[in-house]
Length: 229
Image (cartoon, rainbow, N blue to C red; front, side, top):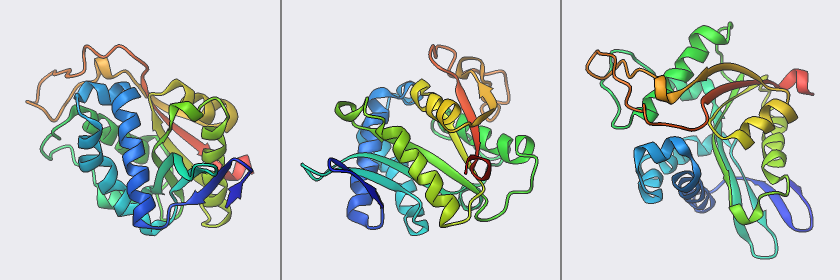
């Protein structure tokens, strides 16, 4: 556990905190994530359909963390993370399976599959690659380097306590991209513009459901945790 006078970083290890963290991430993604805006879903829908199921499924792995504001006891930042090997077992990608309800879910799943089978150049094994699935910070607490501190803490913990060698991240947020590339020496392994992405699962045709997307690309990033030490 890391802390200072105003903020404390802590492991998410109970369902009460897990629910609050999933709700925080869902609300911030609905408001500020351009990919999620394409889905036109509310924070409540994201919570129920995406972030709460993910959080509760990975809670036992004890790899997700939060930041608590000490004076108010409010959770002001959170990150959901788990073992990429276990994630791929729980959510296997199959080109022939039916399309998801949301194209954004399929583009992210497809990019995970491309990383594992084409870009990683190693056999994926348990406790090898930490998957930092989603994270968010309340806007009124941004600008204090908290997001970078939280992600650095998670990566160090995963390496030193759990033995992970790498961290894998997907983002379309320029600030998050900056943290992993500039501050943590991550390498971009794949960049996809959602506007030109073809939804192969849908109608077997050249269908670009996100053609009106006009924001940052989605980037797969790999951080070498051993090299970073």
